[in-house]
Structures are given as structure tokens and as C-alpha cells.
Image 1 (cartoon, rainbow, N blue to C red):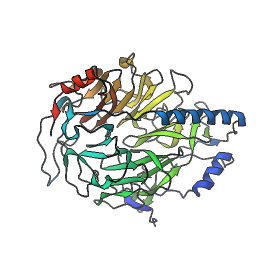
Image 2: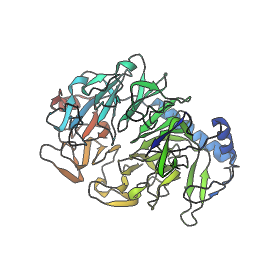
Image 3: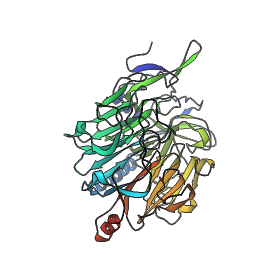
Image 4: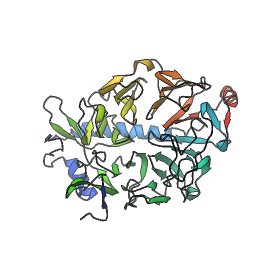
Length: 493
């Protein structure tokens, strides 16, 4: 019999083993005296010795300096641009669902200024490889939404499509610091009022403590059931990852492929059917591991503090404060980078990357729909997993040589297209029928990275790749940049 926090749903993730009290579990983990773990893959954990006290103090000192430097960084704002399709009900589907009245507007074939946000200083643009909706966060901590809303994922209290970027009234008196877009759900983070989930919640992916059941949605944002302050979140297809200010990772939703990182796929048999349980209250991902490539022994890495997570369709990655890269979840086409195609139910370190080596230390990394991308400290890009662009598949990281020398700052992997920001250039690659590459009318695809039209010479602060659309945030702090932006078309759709 499923508990209140574990709602059985057919054809979706299952029973979660009950974790010890969080603080007690943390103390046990730090002492590193637990019994060896038997992973779902059959590997046995090897015990690990504590690091010398002096080494731990030095690492804590380094982390404290990095945190202080991060706090001192100024909030950079700019002008948001959009290209691609804005026929929100049909993108990714070909036709609208029964009862929907689809829009019929021409795609934006190259980046355009978003007219509805004119004069508003934007600090973040947000979308995702599974998403046909987007968010924009302003300097004042206001959040604006645009796009598909059939599950209430935009948080307006209804399921009507939003065709023009509009402020979400629910968060009017809160200071928003971040957001993430899944397929049909979203998470919004606030400075003082916690994290909120909205939209499709049939697998508990909104993390509010209860699933709404199939076909029912959270059209009004509801607070996530996490006591710690959440500073970053990432929504996958039907699950969500959260990072707290303590560097802890929490997960909720479907775990069918192990994407919750709890060493359990949640599957059980009921008669002749496979049933998967929904994890509705976010639980802590307590441990992170490394596997010896020769002996296959699994070793728990003590005291891992995470600074960033990214969710793909059914797989995940996390970057620690020491720049270790971990992946877990569905491993079709080798998208976890472990040189295998077996699913991983626990966070496992990607051995290719080595902290301290500028060539192989991870600056940032993100999940695409079917793979992963990483940028090293020299601005070089690596990718692995399924590559929808040229149908290549690789189960381990390989350099993307076409981007060599670009000094990449940020990358936004999508499903069929990817966007990259470098010094005064925005670059795109992949398939397009809706203008999401921003390369002008008639461009159908670009298997090799190429510059987006109209924005060469502009410094892109951030980028986001949604389903059939692309967002850029560009710097307008000097007169030359302002002139280039003034020459762009304005999108009033």
C-alpha cells in the first residue's frame, strides 16, 4: 500500500526506500563508517578513509574564498532576445490538441527584441530542452512568463496560453532569484519565501508533498516541501532536482530510470503489471560515488557539496564545489559519459574530467535532451551521448573541435538544437524548421556551429534553448551595443 508521500502511478517511477533523519544521515556519511553499499548494478562499495585534517581545512578555506568571490560578483542585466517559433500549442507536436485554438504567426528567423519587456532590466532568461514555455527574471526580482500553459506551468491560476511576456501576479510581492522549465511543470525560487512548483504534478515532480493525479494540475504555484533554502533547481521531463544553500541535492518526481539518484528505480510488480511510485516530497540525495574502471569497485566520496545541477529528459548531472562532475539516470546512447549504456541509480563521477587540470576541469556542464555538454576552464566544449544533429553517439566525452578557439562562456543544449555564447558572438547548431538557430530565413539545419545573424558584436550574458525557440540575454552597457540592438527587429507577438 503506497503512503501519502508515495502515490502509485502506472507506467511511472516507484517505492522509495525510507531514508534516515537528514541530520543523522549526514553525520553518519561524514564519519564514513557505514556498511558497504550494494548498488543496483551489482557493484559493491569500497570503504574510504577520511582525509587528513589539514587537507580538509585547506579545502574548506578554498571553498570559502570561492563563495566570497561569488557573492561579490555584480548582478548583470541586459536586453532579452528571442528567435524561433511562437506557435506554442503546436511546436514539438505538429498539431494542436483537441479544443485548442493554435496561433499562426511567422517564426522569428533571427533574434528579435521582446517588445513586451522593453525598458525592463532582465538578469535571467529561462527555458529547457523539454519546454515550450519560458521565464524572464528582472533586476527587481519580478518574473515574467511566456508560452504554453495547458498544465498551468506558468502559474497564472489558469491554463490559457500566454502570447506576450507577462508578469506572474502570484510572485508580485516576492523577490524571485531563479526558475526552471520542465515539459509541463515549472519551479520558481524566491529569496525569502521558498521554492514553488506549478503545472503537471501527476508524478509529484513539483515537489509539493502530494501528487495531483493524472490529468490534474497545479495551476496556482504551491510551495515545495523542503525546509532548506533552495538556491538552484532544474526540471526534467517529469522530475525535479533542487540544490540548497548548504550544497545538498534533493529530488522529487519519477525515478523510473534512476534519475532521482536514490539507488531505486521505484518499480514493483502488481499482479502482471509493472507499477512505478511517485516521490512527491523532495528527498535528499545523500551520497556520491566513483567507480574504479578496472575492478568496478564503487567508492563513496565523503562530504560532497554541490554547486549546480542539470536535468535532461530522464538523466542528470551535478557539479561539486571542487568541480567534480557526476551523472546518473537513464543512460541510453551513453549519455552519462561512463563508457557504458547501463542506467545509473546513484550519482557517479565522470572520470574523464579531473579537477585542477585546466584542460579537464569543468567550468560548467548541462544536460541536453539526450546527452550532455561541458565547458572546461579554457573555454573548450565537450559533448557525449546522443547527438540529434548528426546522429552520432558517444558514451564518453569528446571535444567539439568546431568550437575550438571560441572561448565559450555558456551553453544551452536543447533537443534538436544547441546555443553557445562566446566573446561577442552567439553560436547555434542543429536542426531547425522554425528559425530557432537564428540564421535567417530558409536555414534548415547546421551540423557545424555557425554564428547567429544580427547579434555578432554583441556580448551575450546568457542563453537558453527551449523547444523550437531560443532566448539570448545581451549586454547593452555601451553605446555601440545599444546601436546594434536598436537595429534589431522588435517582436510584438
